Length: 300
Image 1: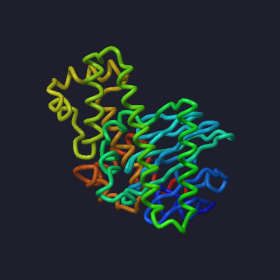
Image 2 (image 1 turned 120 degrees about the vertical axis):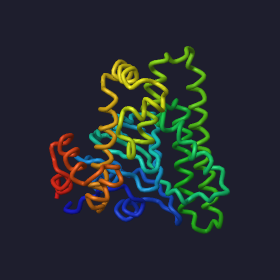
Image 3 (image 1 turned 90 degrees about the vertical axis):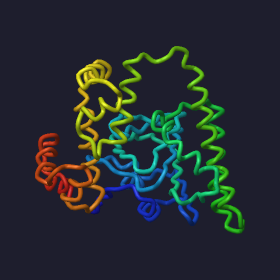
Image 4 (image 1 turned 135 degrees about the vertical axis):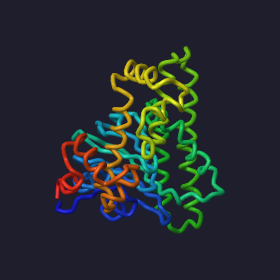
């Protein structure tokens, strides 16, 4: 394949893989051919990819796939369901030869504002904290049945209400996921230690603010801690300094923007709140070994 796919876009997936889709932004596929593995979310690449306003639900029936979600290494294997939210950054690193899975791809505008799903998908905090779930055999069989009914309903072009029915099948899937979240919370018998809570609040704050705030002092002020104490706690829990976490998020975003968009280096620098494009270039070179121009050309 000569053309590289640098972003996960609904239209790109729809045009390049065999799928069942419905007008308005919904598709499902499970026929993981070699052609499919050249595109989208299951392409093994040396660069990160950004989702473009789509949610992906994947459930695995055999084998495994390893990928990075933001800075977290994830593996989806048998009887697991993973959810990737709009605008998250992913990079697939390994796909086992026997990998089998079902994928549900939903464009954000598939659901209208009156639909309850809008309220569900906006509860990002729960899914950002945990986006993977182990299903029992019965739960997996239910998901497989729902997936099959989605495919059947997509193909039932004579049904005037197939879009609404499919929306409700999606709601069933998400309500099952939130039931799993509720059960997980019930199983937590002991409260988290104060250092762990500090670390988790710090990470959530970095994920929300790293594009504009690069200074450790900002996050310490947000947590009402001294920079020295906060940094000590972050290193104690994670083995990384607070500034490392901030820089890693910035670098990951920069890599995605360089590969997933045609934005100029100046625009990327502005997006990531660097004082000058030269400052951004030096920062990127120091952390990756490449200038932005060199990195953008990799793989061409």
